[in-house]
Image 1 (cartoon, helix red, strand yellow):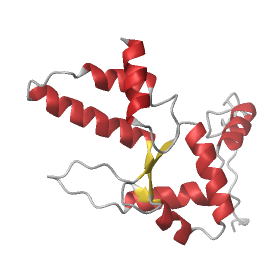
Image 2 (spheres, rainbow, N blue to C red):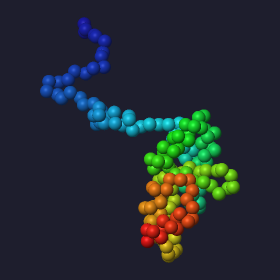
Image 3 (cartoon, one colour):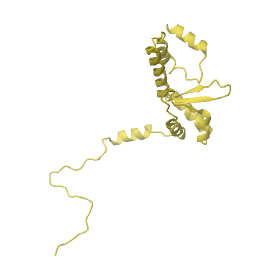
Image 4 (cartoon, helix red, strand yellow):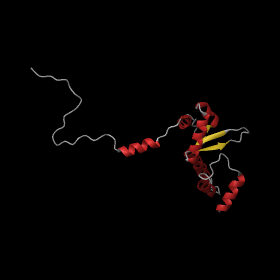
Length: 165
């Protein structure tokens, strides 16, 4: 008669066989660093969700943007939204724009989408053999990271451009 014992999930290692390595290639310090860098906020999650729902239309090359009022309606604490938007703006994650609707409307766009929009316009003008494409490079180098306000005046842009030239 065989002696049956309940099976265990542990397997025996053979002599000389190395012990199994943990599945993660990250050490404890790297994991702690990742945890510190992942600060998910209600505002950022809401922005990503709204961005994902932005309609994609092939013939229109508008990158996703979110209205500030849409964000306010999705996140309960408006003060928190304002603080987090300001922080994300300073960190270079997104841009805010004052819309010229005559009301106090603002749009929010992720910076990578904004840069992609600028690049698309630049390439389209380049294929049409348009002149003045250097203004796009100047804008990316001198304006995007230094002017964080939702609107920039014409005079401010022109004077900055003339100083750089």
